[in-house]
Length: 330
Image 1 (cartoon, helix red, strand yellow):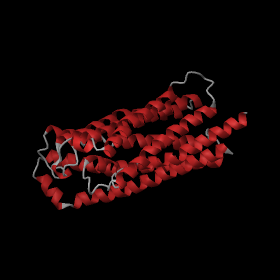
Image 2 (cartoon, rainbow, N blue to C red):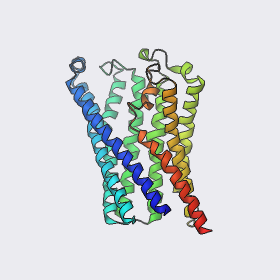
Image 3 (tube, helix red, strand yellow):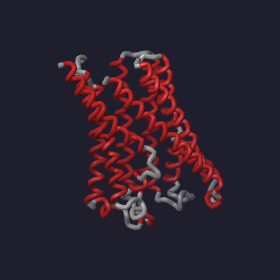
Image 4 (cartoon, rainbow, N blue to C red):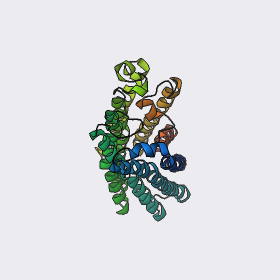
């Protein structure tokens, strides 16, 4: 019974991920069309060199449109796999295996579509912002918030996703899949979340006139902001390290209940981080009174990672499942 409940919980979580991925894909298409038809942006870009025009539109279009569509396709395959998981109750089903391989492939390709954005951000930094980019954002902000984080993503995350996919293709043992799955999750959380969000805080320390003073030490040292900083820099790192422990099992006889309890606690902490960010964002007034990098990063209008909220609901399911398992064993 609990296994079925866990499967249904996974289905709901993946369905939310797919739904939000589809939403962002539509938003990306609409956004790219608006960029292409925006004559003000085009005229500003035309004042600079041709190579910058190409980089700008490729950076905005490939990751902002093509990449988001590819992720939505991967989300569909993940959803399709979990539907069969619930219906067939067999992880080893050929349909599930094929869908999981496809989902991992498309998610890996999604991160590779960030390459043009990485190149664009580094190019903007090295020309010292002497080309048009959103009313001349300070180059250091783009280096911290876009160039370095996306470089980390395109370097490490696809490699881990493709490695995990290769283990699925090879029909590896459950233990091997759990090991590589947890290691992939570790890299995912470390790079996509901890590193990029920590770099966003670093970017928020760069003076920016449009931020109206909402940057630097004066902003960071406000109690509520410093709490958000610690929760991000320390909290997400601890979550990543906790995930890493799953890849280093000390014994082959680890209890299933203990694993479920451990996984559930990590999920709950991870999802709780995004709940905290939502409360922090709205209770402090949102972006309007705080027009800075950090609020733009975590705000719902720009945060494509809010699908992670599902772990707040999925985590307790695993925790309850572990207790049921313990009671059954006793």
